[in-house]
Amino acid sequence: MKKILILIGTRPEAIKLAPLIKAFKAKKESFQIRVCTSGQHIEMVTQVLSFFEIKEDSRLETMKEGQSLTALSTFLLSEIETELIHFNPDLVVVQGDTHTALAGAMAGFYHGAKICHVEAGLRTFQNRDPFPEEMNRRLISQLADWHFAPTTRARANLLHEGIPEKKIVLTGNTIIDALNKGMHKIEKKQYPSVEKVKKILSHSTRPFILATVHRRENQGEKLVKICQAFREVAETFGVSLIIPVHPNPEIAGPLRAILGTTPNIILIDPVPYPGFLWLMKNCMLILTDSGGIQEEATAIGKNVILLRETSERNEAIESGFVFKAGTDVEKIVRLTGTLLEKQSVPGIKNIFGSGDAAIQIVTFLKKQL
Ligand code: UDP
Image 1 (cartoon, rainbow, N blue to C red):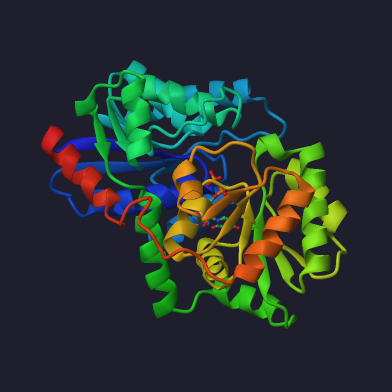
Image 2 (image 1 turned 45 degrees about the vertical axis):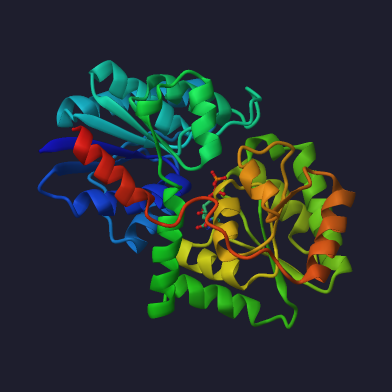
C-alpha cells in the first residue's frame, strides 16, 4: 500500500485533479490517498470537490489579504511540511504551475517523497509570462520524478530540457476526463448553478458570448483595454456578453467599475463548474485569457479568442480553435466579428487527450511503485 498526498490550490487544480483522485480511490487496495487543499481558492475549490463528490482530508489556511508571493510561498512550504510529517507519503502529486504546486514539489522533495507532476511540460519560453506560472512549472520539472505530459509538444519540451525519456508519460490532460464526466452529470441531473445561469440569460433574447479574465499579466492598463473591447463587442454585434468575474480584487474592481452598467454585458459571480460547463456548451464564442478553458473549448467544439500575447497551448491555436488577440482592442473586435459570421468551428479534436489521462497515470504509477 503506497501513501499519496494530493495537493490542490486553485479551482483549475481541483478540476484537473478530481478525475485522478477518483481513479486512485478506485484502486483502494494499492493506494492510500490524502487530499489536502491549500486555501488559495477556498470557495471555488470546495464547489468543484463537492460536484465530483470528493472530500478534502485537510485544509491549510494560507491566504492572507495582500500577501506577497514570497510570503505565500513561505507559508505554503511550512504548512505543507507539517502535512508531510503527519502523513509521511511515498508520493506527492502536484498539478500545473501554481504556488501550491511548486511549494508541494519542493517540500515533498525535501521530505524524500517521490514527486509526480500532472500537466508537465507546458512552456511559453518567457520566464515572466505568465508570471509566476512559467517559472513555477519549470522549477517543478526540476523537482519531479515523474512527468505526466498532456501533449506530444509538452513531452518534447521536457525532453529538450534534459528530462529522461523514461520519466515522462504522455497521457493527455485530465481536464478532458473532468469535462466528459461533468457534461454527463449535467445532462443527467439538475444543478442549481445551471438553472441559475439559464435564468439570468432568459432576460435577453440575444445569443451570448462567454468571457473571462483572471491573469496577473492582464491587470492594470491591459484590463482597461480588454473592458473596452468587451464594450465594443456588445455594442456592435447584437450579442450579450456574460462574464463570470474572478474574485481577485485587481480584476473584479476594474471590471465592475468599467462595465457594471454597460447594456448587454452581464457580470456575474464565478460560476460553479456545472453552470460554467453549460455556458461553454451553449455560447457562440469564448473570449478568455484562461488556459483550461482553451483546452475545454477544443473538446466541446467552440472557438476562443485568446486575450494573451503568449500561449503555452499552441496546439489549440494551430488546430484552428483558438485565435490569439492579446489585448489589442481592434483585433479582438475584428476577430469576434469574423468568428460570429463564420458560425462554424473545426470538428472536435482530441488535442488534449481522449478523457482517460487519470486512468493512464494510475496504471503507470501502480507499475512503478
Ligand atoms: N471555470 C469555472 N467557473 C468559472 C470560470 C472557469 O468552473 O466561472 C472553470 C473552467 O471550466 C476551467 C477552469 O475553471 O476548467 C479554468 O480556470 P481558470 O481560467 O481560473 O484558470 P487557468 O485554466 O487559466 O489556470
